[in-house]
Image 1: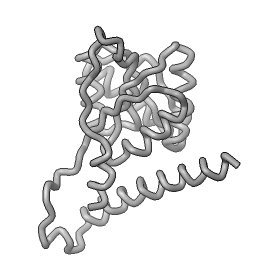
Image 2: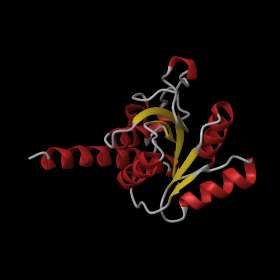
Image 3: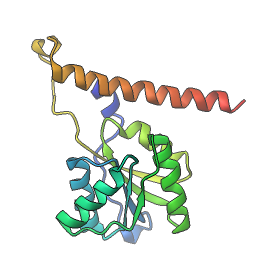
Image 4: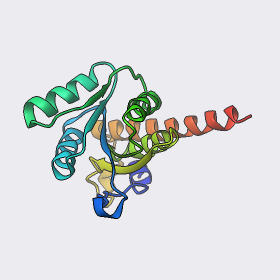
Length: 177
């Protein structure tokens, strides 16, 4: 139920057509993971757009290595100094601003997309969500309420996103004064 509350706010994207003038100018991939990287590969091959790998603690390097060495997809930019999603957004926006890029396809986990979308949009970038890893559950069963390691981990991730987005909005509210 927690994951659904976040994931229903984002839907799998439709890539805008270049001829309509609404096309993205770059793909931003947040802190790797196989599903995120595979979506970046698919999008880059479909669109030919340049890729920015974003993630501190060596994540940007890992994304670049996997995309280039395993799939032959070039990574034009790397943002490897961030320690949070907010910093991913700020530091990536600076890099993209230098390349005169204003509209991006943002690749991240569906659970993470509402917070990432808000933070990237707040930098002034136009963001087209490209969520991956939607939860597999379609309907709840009675045994879904029985404690499990998978359920605990999923709940923990969902609560992290819910509280992270609330904290970000609260900080924005008080900063406005």
